[in-house]
Image 1 (tube, rainbow, N blue to C red):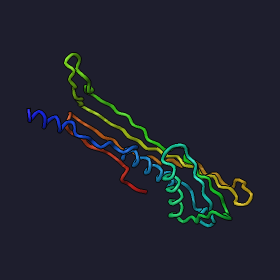
Image 2: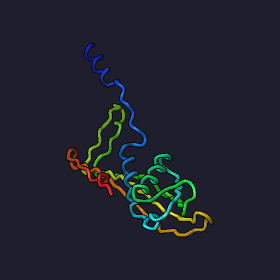
Image 3: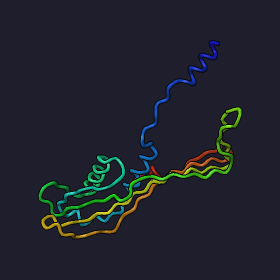
Image 4: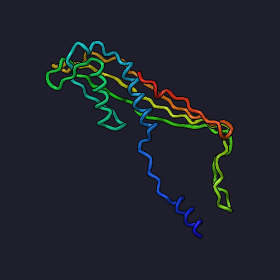
Length: 180
């Protein structure tokens, strides 16, 4: 009976919840945002004083805004809050992740009648995780608010794929550790 209680106690120990969004999701989003920013043509902005506003509809608000402004500063753009030569509106029209999987084998299921879980049997399994970000800058005259320049949209992508072959052989292919 003591062994049963000890085993039951081990299985009932609390497990801390995972962070939301997951670490992989955070990595994919930030790396794709960084890559989209890296594709923007910002050379003309380096000679002027710039006020920056950031707009988007997904992701952690304060982090995305601060990351975009800090990235621009780190790449030689002087940002100001008063009397700018240019006003830049940066739009992150896309910022998110997608995932999918392919399984050749038997998926996990609950056995009928005996109510026992049957584990997944994967001869081949491919779990795909993708991050994507699209950034577009619109430049306006600091005094008249007339549009001066609207360079094309820049897209950044990141990926993390996990493979399982013959139940036990697993490996990961990823580009999230490659910083631009």
